Length: 228
Length: 227
Length: 36
Image (cartoon, rainbow over all chains, first blue to last red; front, side, top):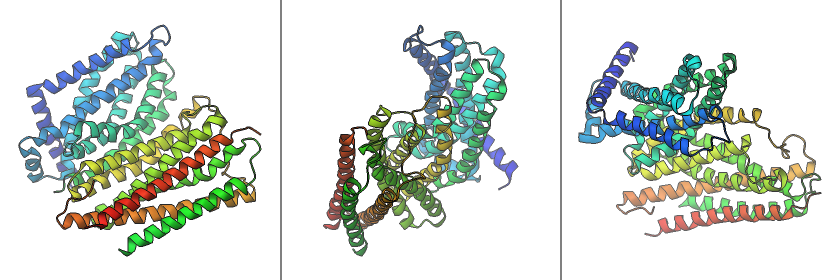
């Protein structure tokens, strides 16, 4: 495995996906509208007099991201089902791992796009001060997202070819999302409450470990999911 | 089929011995002073929990070796261990709250051990659902192996995440009988129960393995296997 | 000593039912697969 080649091929696969996405723009637009709707639903599903916005904001943020990410990941391999596109991709003279990495990059860009819409909307709708903590918050979101998108991309490669793809992916994925989510929620709460950065370093480290373990694992396991 | 016979005998002996454990635990083991009779639930709860966790690790290990060797026996074993592990998980998740209600005063609490078992159960259910959703046997085995390995690797992370929560929320005092210090007769009962659960695990897995084998034979013979 | 024998009996019955039930299910499923 030559790593520069691996990454270049991965980027080719990713840019192909992103180009398809960019041409149609339906998925990203639906996901954006979905995020807005979930945030609106949260506004009606709470009692503003009982719980303050800052206390609730981390949960709202992460539940929204969870749902949006699952929707996005369902799409990644669905795209390849039409016209046996996946077979064509597998026939290409590239490493299987680079297909996975490409899909991972495309999914990350997609989910990041959705999250970039979600954060300002959260600040707007729930009157949360994000700007002072924007740097650490973005780092936190990035670390948590890489972890669960890595697992989700691997699983979606399997579930798209099963009978209940849309339902099976969240069922398989949610138990794997909860460790990074629980750390992210705790850290976001600390961050938005204006606590010093040193309090969340532990969580950031754990998220980083989770990312490394599961990205590595997925790179090695992915060939087994497409090996015809 | 010899294997099936062995499995059935092991299970039958295990169930008879389970009745023996019941008699010993209920009549010949002293009652714990602070918790009363409810403490005796632990003679069933802890052995089941030990095997529920061990079964998941065995699924993961079998999956790793399956991906290297592509030996169908490993896949059959993983499927069997997952199903039996699910049953033991159900035992843990039902006896836990039954013990928790009189001791903690609530059926459910997000205590680390309880939450961990719930995660384990969800992992098992996902694994079995995935197996059920893939019709092609070779594909099913590979997919299940991938999920089994991920599940095994996730276990330490679940440990990390659930054990962080109690530091933030007050937790009811967990009395842990069956942990270090236990009077001799209680320990004997507990070890006996652990032995019986081990026997039941083996018996169940052997039978479930034989069942997978029989179904594969039927499918190979051109008949539709029963779901 | 607290009075909570009912909980204990419920748990013991439940575990018995689950284990015997699963054993029975395995027995029936294997028997059905054995029949040609």
